[in-house]
Image 1 (cartoon, rainbow, N blue to C red):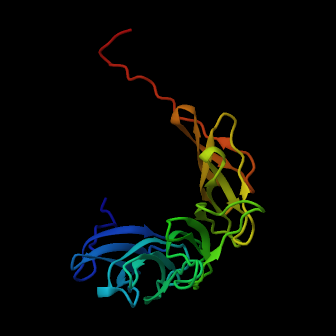
Image 2: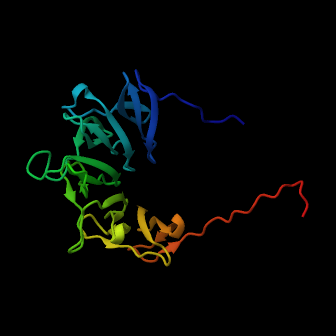
Length: 269
């Protein structure tokens, strides 16, 4: 039977060493290539590659690096990554797949200027609606979890409970629900992380319960139905996958695979 599929070379003209970073359900690809030995980001929409433009003030117009693409409709995707700014500092950037020549810089809290302003941003996730999450990082490398509304470069701090600290909390994933939730982790007691859930980008986080016997947990992903996947650490540095239900109920520790010693077929017992 003849296969209907074949390998194709999607490298853009003049580009080499291309590596796909992400692909969505519509088949739109975000990829990174070398062009004149500089890191250059591309989006491949319906088989047509287009360079994702760097920030206008970047000396030499490079480098940029794409990290992810959301699952919006074909031609309406948000592509997220980073570019160096005029000071050669990596900054979070988003592009629309329909307008690859118009990057939007994701500014840190306080903007790029002003007393107490942070200095750089990092992207960790993007929802189907185009809301981006990540970190705003100050000159001491202290991060604050933030979100940027779709199409906006203005950072908004994710809320914390009364008397809690934002410092070095990490927003790791945003769901594709109509009202997206965010999961991540924050520094907890004795220097151990606490898995956390923001029910929406405006709500304070809640701490997810730790399974019996676990030392601490981090939350890593959340799906459209609100199920949360994470990782918990037990004594002896043993890691177990854990699922929390909608709203952080549970958790359920996933069973491990039993590994049996291999028996040599030539040895009789």
